[in-house]
Length: 88
Image (cartoon, rainbow, N blue to C red; front, side, top):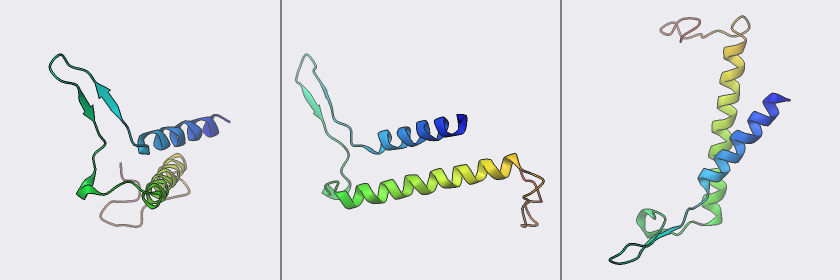
C-alpha cells in the first residue's frame, strides 16, 4: 500500500513538472510578463505532451525496476565484468 502511495506521488510530481508554467511579476519600473521557454519558436502541442508523458513513464518504469533489483540482490546480478556482480 505504501508503494502505491509513493508511486502516485511520484507520478503526480512528474505530471506537475511537465506542465507549462506562466508567471507574472510587477516591478516598480515596468511590469514583466514571463513566458515559458520556447525552443526555436515552437509552440507546445499535444504531440509534445504525449512524448513528454511517455518519457516520464519510461523514467518511472526504470526507477521502479532499479529499486526492485536493488532490494533483491540475491536474485539479480550485473553481467558486465567491468562493473562486477553488485556495483554501487
